[in-house]
Length: 284
Image (tube, rainbow, N blue to C red; front, side):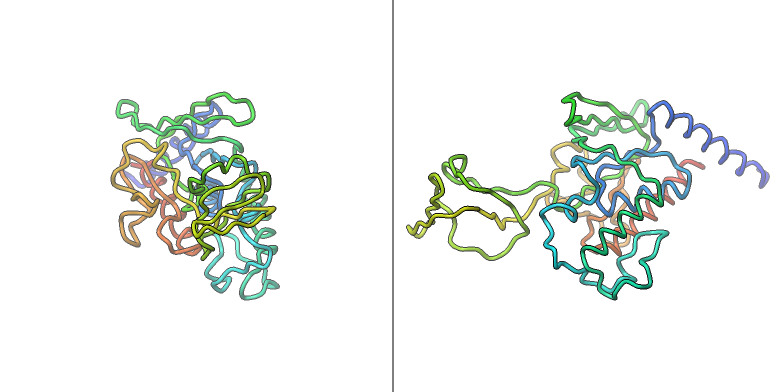
């Protein structure tokens, strides 16, 4: 094979995948538009690999933009270890980037990389079709209530470790007249036994009126609800089974970005490894 043939093959592959994208048949399907999903999308676009990104919420980086991160939050690592691929933090940013600056960085990242997630799409199932050698994904459009179907050769799980809020079973919780929130796991008072109107009864027998209940019980993975046939990539806690640096790659075109507990630095590495591996698969 001459050196010209691989380049021709690459051009044909990209042309075919671009045509597939126009017919709503992306090469890669990314589930989750948090930092891991955004980084993966940027790396795929950088290599001209068509993709779609499905996000359950109505915005990207919802854990950062909504109520699950407090206003005074700062990245706990120096900024050079928290950059997403291809775009650095502005030199004017402090070493430990505050939440407001990080959100501005993500806004610029999405704009510059032309990332357009499909919002309010809750993935119901993802099944590998051995006949077509593609992943068939069904997602609920939360705006219309309709089930949408997508198909792609590659599937990237980028839903993170905090997909679903964990709310404990509390007797008559539905009768509580105040607000109920869930935050990351922290130390709390004795467990709640029951509620009535705005009164909370604890297991030690004491009761007090409250306007708001904040469950500091953390979150749990949702992937096991919709990803079918995965017994090798993620464990029951949503963490990659394989150890670093091979935590990102599964089988049959299945990948995961960010679940190795290595923060934004690890997510950025996963995203680049995934995109490079997909490109290599397309050229084979």
